[in-house]
Length: 70
Image 1 (cartoon, rainbow, N blue to C red):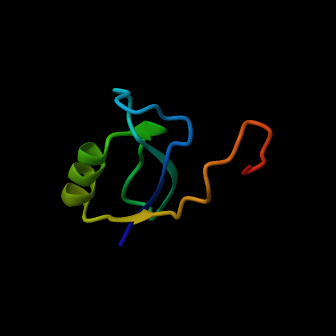
Image 2 (image 1 turned 90 degrees about the vertical axis):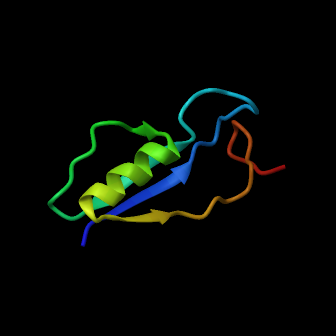
């Protein structure tokens, strides 16, 4: 079974009409994704058709541009 690892984008504004998820990696040889950013409904449709499992990676704090979380 293939797995698609995703996380939420860090630089996202409320009401922004850009894809919310970023593909981090894919495990398995039966799927290849060409997009780095993807909408949740698109990702779920791909997973349903290919039988892949979606793994949502945890989000660690909000963070600042300098790498600190203050």
